[in-house]
Length: 319
Image (cartoon, rainbow, N blue to C red):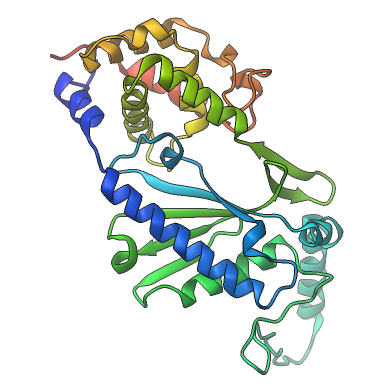
């Protein structure tokens, strides 16, 4: 297998950062709790008791390595924010408003200074309009609240759909944390798309059950293979930041249990890669919903192409 030696595979599989990962997760949990608690004192329909922090990537399955990103969904149960999203958070309406403003501004003969809208009121508290407080505003306020609870060396970036936290002193120089604020209801994490399309829902209940069942059947080699597949996905494309755990777990869940047997993880790796190479993985069942196949699973997107690239590059076994 080109550039993939036994030594490399074994080193990836045996890497353990359990203590560091546990400490990082505790810090993230504490950061989110403090930030939501701060907002709950100002926003009446934001409550810490109705908020859930869900590990998503390797933090979900235990396959963490030094290169892992810490990814979470922060779900908030708030019917008022949901209503406000459907009423006011329409991207097409926003686009037309921006276009109209740009056109009007270009026609003005005299430039006038526009007063910048402040995020804080006279008492230094976050301002909000109860009828227009949507998920976008919650994400912006959450960013501000997180900054209050981090050291000066940490930065929280608002990437529109998620918050990206970089903190050398708070989390470590190479630790990358991604927090996706969503709405939450009856086990569903709900991402707002537009007024017309509504919400995209993800439920992890079935995923948790299937991952647990697979682990019970095949043992820790399942986690080792997740680590190995993560490394292959990361090295396959520089532009592909996060290996999609839903896709990787789906591949390995659909792989026959007997192929995970044995203490030689390199031999296990070779057997599983050969199986995937000979299989139509697009018809594998999704670990999120076994009623649909991976080619129909919206949560995995371009991963089929990346897997093909990996398999095409693996053509020579090195001992």
